[in-house]
Image (cartoon, helix red, strand yellow):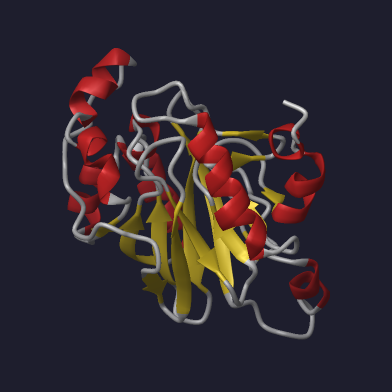
Length: 241
């Protein structure tokens, strides 16, 4: 997976050491950029199929003009919006972006419907205006797949940070977008409505760790990491927290 960095922050998107080793001999299959949005510095992510330039926007939390400018600079054609979960910093701009691009929204899991029904109220608590309550065109569940161009992602339902959190995993690229389920050195907060620390840790240990140590991931905030790195050093996984 290639990276691009115009005015946006670049992401750790090399999906595995093996892919990096073959980067010079094989054409890139995918590309990605991160567009940090709102005061939460949330990692709105644009991922595209390199041959076709068909793209998806994951978690447009706000600052929609900034996202649209990034799409223009990247030269891709966005065909879908994917949501990892329903918290305001990840969905605040979803309805506006859907209207601007005239594309469907897929995700999160239906267990986060109560969050999408209260986007306006949630935004008001944080001084965020312009958000709208909405329902996605497709709810996602464990075992579903989504695709953009020739890129296919498996869906893993990983509750705990929110009841309806989902993870997008591309087996071929050895790459995942995990939203706020797992971070570099940490895990998602669980003190919000519907959160459960025990459930979150169970999701990580039963859904994410089995994906393999070579899997790299982008998360909802901050730098990305790999499953192997977090298995070895993340105190919430090693039991040191």
